[in-house]
Image 1 (cartoon, each protein chain N blue to C red):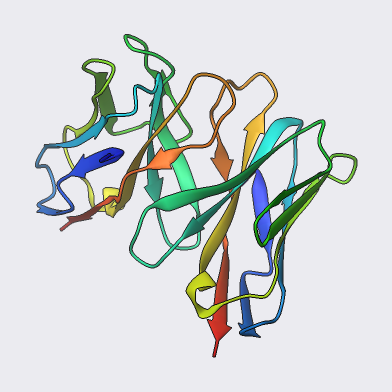
Image 2 (image 1 turned 120 degrees about the horizontal axis):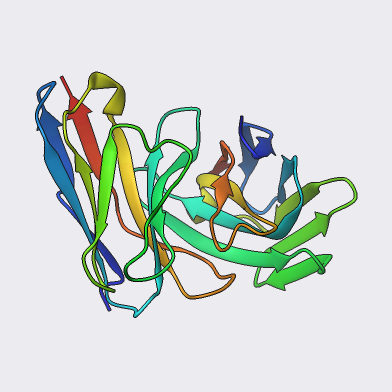
Length: 112
Length: 112
């Protein structure tokens, strides 16, 4: 079974709105990462948050991590049409080196 | 910088044929990975190499073999292709320790 599960599976918003995606996982982690994948392309690393961190920012991205609830959220503020993509969370397990386990993704569509 | 280069980009095989997917990175990364991506299942780890000279199985290694030829190159071989191996294959690399991955653009493989 997947270690990470994203919610919702699909999200459609208007340009300028904020988009929030959630990720839940099952076992102890040492880090959680978010990736973006445009249709037909490879994944692009967005942000990494370590297990001892609670919040991290990068440009219009804000990631939170709640290890007690085994969950993370990715907030994209002031979304743009170019943000249309699939977003994946990936977890690095404690003692797992730098191997990552990916979730099934959230498909975000930002409409003009 | 090229980053991670995968060849070929597309391939059609007949059941039972063999082929090798090539991957090379020019970022002097220690770790390299092979994932497959299937609809609705996210990315699943096939094999990884934490450093030159070492390889280990991931979540779905059956039917595949790998070679870490040198620090730059990590190839994935299908000895006898099966329709269940129809998928998009991604190679990725990362620095030593906890860090984000750099992905290639993928190989779309169809086994008929």
